[in-house]
Image 1 (cartoon, rainbow, N blue to C red):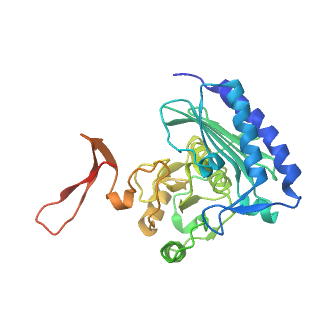
Image 2 (image 1 turned 90 degrees about the horizontal axis):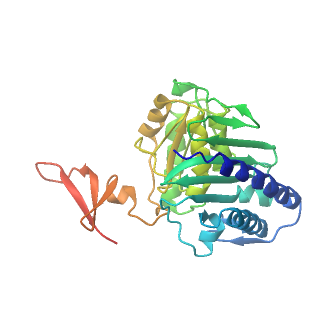
Image 3 (image 1 turned 90 degrees about the vertical axis):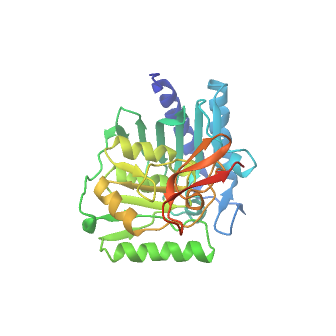
Length: 314
C-alpha cells in the first residue's frame, strides 16, 4: 500500500497558506454572488483560495485530478475516478464567512481508487488544524483525537445543518427530523454552519453525532476520514454503507448512536454529486450490469414476492 504521507504534509502546508488569505479577508467588505439558491453564497475569496490550492497542487503533482466546489460551480464534472484526486472546499461555511460568524474551514481530502487516503480540515478562526491519514489516526494540532464513544442516544448532543435547499419538502423534512430527534429525547441539537467542522466536533468528542442530507462530497470527504480515524462511525442516512457522492451522511460516536439516528430521520431527494441515480429514487444501492443500473435491494410491490428493480442506463 502506498504511503501518501508526503502528499499529506504538502496539503497541510498549502492549507496554512490558504488560511492566511481567509484571515486577511474575514473582516473586509465582501462581494457576494448567488449560486443555486439565495442561501448558496460564493465570494471572491472562495474562488481565490481554490485557485491558490489547485495551482500549488498542479505544480507539485501535475498528473493528479481535482474535485473543487467552485470548479464544479463553474461547470467542471465532479466525477471521482481511481486516479489520485484532491477534493477541495476552499471555504466551508461561506455564509458564516460573509456574516463574520467565526466558524469557517478549509477542507482538503485526497482519494485514490475512490478511497480517501487523508483529510485536512483547518478551522481558520479557531486555528485548529484537524488531519487524518487512513490507518494512522486523527489529530487536532498534533493532539490525538477520540470520539466520545457514547452509546446512549438519549445523552447525545447532535449537530446538523439547515443547508441551502429551501423548497417545501426539504424544509418540512428538515424540521420534522429535528422534532423526532428531540422527542427521543436527546440532549440537544446544534448547527455551527460548516459540515467539515461539525464532523470534526464529533471526532474530538465535542458532539456525539452529525447527520445531514444535501451537503456535497467536498464538504465532508476530509472530515469523514477524520471521524473514522478517531474511532467513530460514518454511515449513510439510512444506516447503510457511506457513499461519499450520495450527499447523505451520519457520523457518530458509536454504531448504537448512528443506528438510533437512522431509525428516526428521513431523507429528501437530492441529486448525487456524480449524477448517478438517486438512492431514494432507485430504491437502494445500485450496481451496473449489462448496461443497466440494477438495485441491490428489493422493493415490495403489490405482488406475492419481492421484485428486483432495474433502472435503464443514463
